[in-house]
Amino acid sequence: MAMLPIPNRFALVTGRAEGETPLTAFDAALLDAGVANVNLVKVSSILPPGAKALERLVLPPGALVPIAYGRLVSAEPGTRIAAAVAVGRDDPGRFGMIMEHTAYASASEVEAAIRRMVEESFTIRGGRPREILVRAVEHVVERCGCVFAGCVLWYGP
Image 1 (spheres, helix red, strand yellow):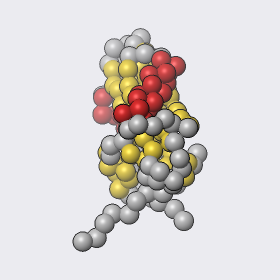
Image 2 (cartoon, rainbow, N blue to C red):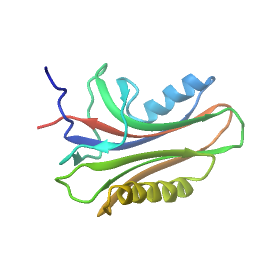
Image 3 (tube, rainbow, N blue to C red):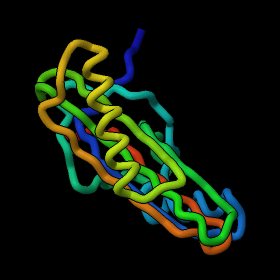
Image 4 (cartoon, rainbow, N blue to C red):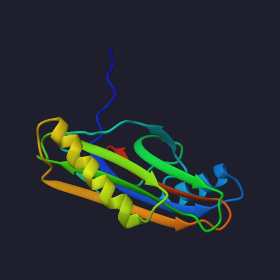
């Protein structure tokens, strides 16, 4: 039985945008985050052991891309929405934790909340994170807005 390869690269990405509909707002937020022209495959919360953090990944159009993400769409003008993604690691040679969070809040509020979530995920496993990497974004809705935050997993030499 063939096994899927384990990703060894990751990038934290965020996006925010407006659209005429919830779907087009989401698509535009993906474009803002740099992941609109690939097929996102939603995964849960484990960062592979030894995965290297990159600022930006070059993804081939149409690729199947593993990603843990959160998104929030609102069609209430004036509403503040936010999304955050975080990765915590205790040892680069071990697996890490990925958490994503969205809320009707500011970027700083979702960032604080997601840091607590990463810490709790390590506590549950009997450890403590040595590092926590976070990206957060907020947006004030004009007509139909979306915020997006994700941890893209990918492959490299």
